[in-house]
Image 1 (cartoon, helix red, strand yellow):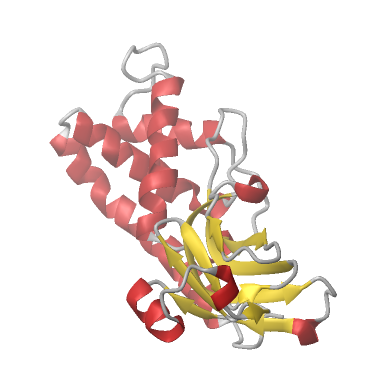
Image 2 (image 1 turned 135 degrees about the vertical axis):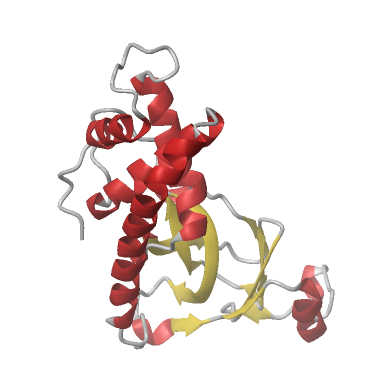
Length: 227
């Protein structure tokens, strides 16, 4: 859990020292420009490099009776998601855990339709509580077809929103990893190969610390039913 004590400005201050640009009035190193590098690193590179346990949450959508396909809206519920994966559950409106069903997850339409048949006529499809879900081309297909309102809950990786200068980092323990990662990108763009080589050991150290923390968190997770 984050104590939210590290601001975006602190990250920029570290980044300035790393790249040797301590003058915020320099046209190619304004706060605005450096903040772009920070946000790009957080949103594009960090999720592909390290899957932080703290960023896994739940993506949800509600079904309607007799509708079997639903669009994936990555910014639903005020969150933006970069990845979805099982487990997935269908829950009826009673809220009882006894009526929560873990769904079978498909990302190959061939496997999904081999099981259910490629049928698009509603009258020819089974209805009931959904038990299988296909996620393909930003769309969900459910079988059986929902016969009522169900809440579909899927594990999702949440994307960070853009940081402003006065914002605090959602996960403060990542701040040096982010500062050095953004600095690497800046130095690459300005072809400062010598400084890039000098900071690489420190970047790898902060990256490993972040990876180790995430690995330790994963080891403490007990495999029990989530609902």
